[in-house]
Image 1 (cartoon, rainbow, N blue to C red):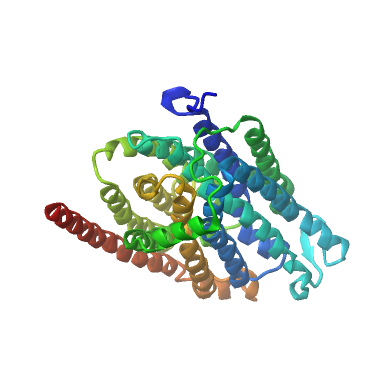
Image 2: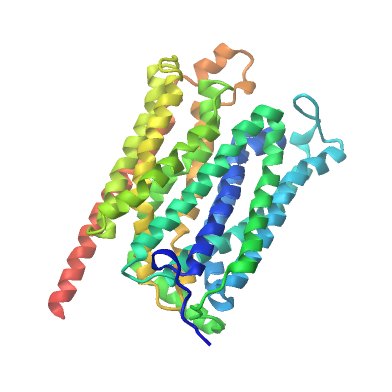
Length: 462
């Protein structure tokens, strides 16, 4: 029996390309739903800004916390079984999000006419059915988070790993771009019910991925499968005792707290400040468009630089992006170039943010993968996503507080003038995130110098 991996284009195995392709479908599903999740929670289910932000933050956070455990379990049961489990759960979960409003409507709590109307849903406990549905998506998505990035590690060598993660990250962002493109045209056709029907689109994408894994995925790399729970526990101890990885996770959390504002703050911010005609889905799509166009070039540009050096460049770009986003409201909401200043400067900030992501994310995953022993790729790459758990919890929580304080819901005010007075300093939101980005960038520089010093000292002693 031939156990060598089946190589395809550019020396990568078929398992590599199948993994990256289904990642594209999963990202299409996730971002189609996530870009409007806070709006779905508020508009369809009647949660307020803080509740919607906290639910979304816990949802996103869970997706990045559970990979620590599901990644270790995926090493044990194998990546094929893990992906089949994941895409089955995701399909069920997204279908649940689409069906839930119909279930509520059948109870008389919510009805739909030309616009969405509510009948006591804000006081009803039935809307909390959303929790087990989101949990189903979280468990399924947590497998994907660890398994696909770990599959890239398994199916590449140290020589082509940076290129492999560049391709992986490009596929992620093609999926993100495509998924976020769907919502605005759908909203233009069927109005607010688009926030419901987008979930059926997501379910279709994950079902296609499920079929693709079942028919096409097979890997020759099986190290770690069948390990005992004791061996899994020993792996946890090793990764938790790696102070470099833990410190790097905490630092990179600063970047992701700012990046997550594309979903936590931006959709409500632009609709409230630039008007209902604003297209948050299209605006958010600037980020994956920039990444798809630039990540390969930037990875090649920084190929001879260390991962820490590449990440440091990106970290100093991120606070600048937040300041650009703040500038729109400072200039006033006049329309100059066919779009309002709010929209124009938001796009400018997101462009810079996308460039920062190109410098940071592929090299961050490469850094973690090189620390992973054979058979523990799922554990280590699952652990690498802990930064997004922290940034989701703190970033979404902070976003809910800042929106309430500086850019509140207009429907809470009796007059438009009263709302304008309350939101005159809405741009202050971005100052908070710029400050977080500066602190994180400086911390990464210090981290790089300390680790270089310790490595040189170790070499001398050896």
